[in-house]
Image 1 (cartoon, rainbow, N blue to C red):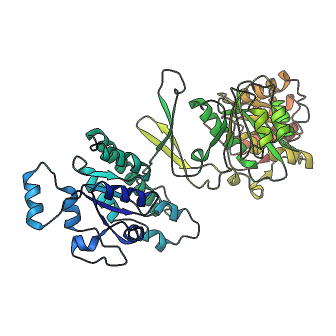
Image 2 (image 1 turned 30 degrees about the horizontal axis):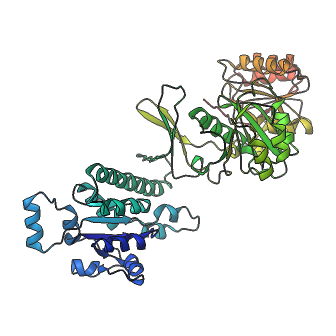
Image 3 (image 1 turned 45 degrees about the vertical axis):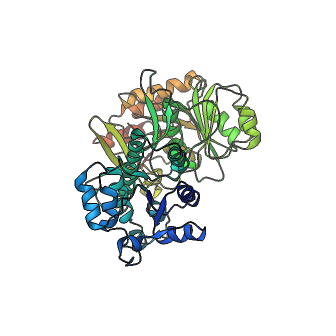
Length: 513
């Protein structure tokens, strides 16, 4: 008779699975709560202490760490020495293991969880059994995912599990235990003041993609355990592409400064991961119209994000523009009906982020660069700002300067944005010099028919020379917000005074490479 050991925290489908095994002639060994759950349903179970001859102890901390368990798992069925050892010590082989682990990740995700509670959710016996069974997968079927139960029963009823299927199940085990250990490492390292000496990043393939940045490149979307892209829900449209997903992430980052703003709608229009339009409005439709006005030409084929619900009016406003993706925390039913008329449009709901205290990674050849994730709140502390010029901003200019400072952080460096009435009217992005970005922002604004006189300007980093200020003043800019910190700050501020501009120094830059 074949023997299965079943010990699971996630009990989805386990009663059906165990019952099916019994009907196929298997006997079941089980532990603790799993044994109780199976017994209640009338499934015959051999308690683990009957196998080991030793009682569970220390509140269940020690129950399966025993030679009669691991000997039964690790014995190679084609090795006579292993089989002789089983016979000598009275060990019955175990032919299938169904184990999943204590819910460590779910436990530590709860803010109220104490350190002591977290430690108790570090599984010891479970990973040990899984690793033993996975190592010996040629002889032992190992199951870590409840979704695999039905197919395993079907295979067993049809004659058994093929070698390649056993190997795939074993690989799934090591992916699972690697993710589990990575979560524990991350939790125990999170209180360190410096970045940890070892980082373990586990990514799960969420969906294959048609191709990467270009058609000849393979691609897939992999997700971590943290909130974010894994929570995306596509409501309409064809498969999201690699480039779509990059732009969606850029759009969500750009809209983040207004995620918690209940009184104003915000809209950002993204092209090639940088904004070509960004604005606040009375509602979603108004914010969209004002963001579109930034640069109606570049908005073609864009990704558009909102900080609020997309309603029918906003959907109707977008009807005539070719858009790749629309993303918002929620899309109401009437709006979705309108958007579904555009067959090539992808419509995505992505909840507002709840935790931005994680690390941010950038790939380099042979490694990763890791940094604290950018949080706009860290550069938005106005108690650290100072008016550096003789002239002070008016109340209206202050309002626009705040908006401009929030907007410029999403623009690729060197970044310059011109703003009027809480809407960008000109954006200069990714230029090799800041004066070129200033020139481009003015050029784009005039190209779209915007009046640049009376606008404010934000720069993501300091002006290294006074020429950027002179370029802004020539366009009619009246106030500037920038970090400061250049060795030529005195000259830059003097230029602003000479040209009768107000200038705010924030003390913190917002590079986005």
